[in-house]
Length: 114
Image (cartoon, rainbow, N blue to C red; front, top):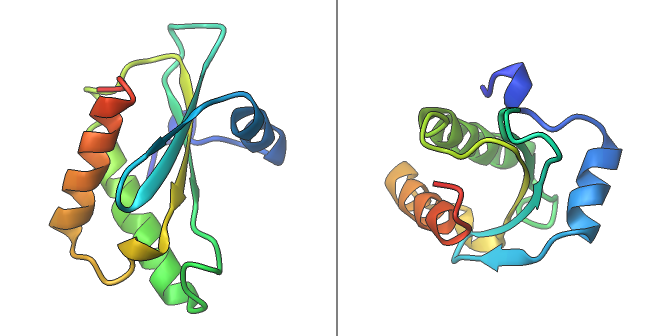
């Protein structure tokens, strides 16, 4: 689980990032980032795993846990001062941890967060 200071809070934060940012795409994710006013604050992440990805909540929750663990593991390498929303695509269902990790890390590099 991500530390509290690294989690997006409230629907307003999600709406602000969704409307005011350009998306970065990968095989399993869509990443939207928005620069914060204060560069010293730690980056905050929000995960969105829609019911369209899987009707089963256990599958959605497993994806969330895996993704948040990958982000938590890379927090020291991630730049400060960003709000990041991560949308999960259907293709991520059934993939193993290493495939998700490789895809997410390459997406973070492309978005210039690592």
